[in-house]
Length: 308
Image 1: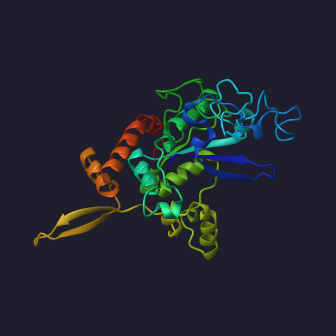
Image 2 (image 1 turned 90 degrees about the vertical axis):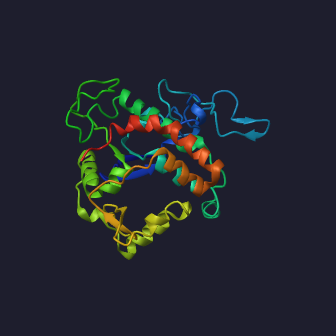
């Protein structure tokens, strides 16, 4: 999944961390955006009275449609959320290579996991990389993030700078976390993330092994059964071990757990073979097509990722 993280400063002086999926903030299938009715502007301000709907309602022939909304749009804003609401957030981004995220999501929509997740159909459009890139570039062009990039030495000379070009005193760094980097170096990435968003880093952030922590995790993920079982069953975040193989003098293969090197990437042929074995020939074709369709957007976002 491609996720977006926002940190909202509350009136009490506390910061609330929200993890959500950018795909659902934008209209489906690249349609023009208009503001969600519950967030539409009102004479007394956001949320004070029923939103004004232009023209007919979103019901056609007695059937209520979730989109398009008959509300005003905001020029340049690709989301259904008003700019004045977006500006209340400090946005950061979590990405993952589609060759990992796509098959991971696909397996949750087929037997046996589909019975647990309740997802019985895979929709390639839900990959969300295109939506994330559009939203990311919108935030950059409006100055809500950037131009400086967290953990990059030359903040102001990014090859894909858009909109703004000089660093401001109120600059909110572009902060992009790649999931593979996080799994390979959790302490380093989380420490860099905390530095970027202004949170004090503590190594205790890497563990949640108390009964209270486990209870909170189970309750938080209850509505998403099947998607977070590994996380629920864990108690800490440590560098993942990549398994390599050596052959001894008796030609017996033994596994070596290597913590100091990255896993060797599979070839395209090896990936296709693995997906065919797991998902069948047709399923593998869907996965491959979806991975390829989202690779360019992932690589674009990857160039902004934290370097540690």
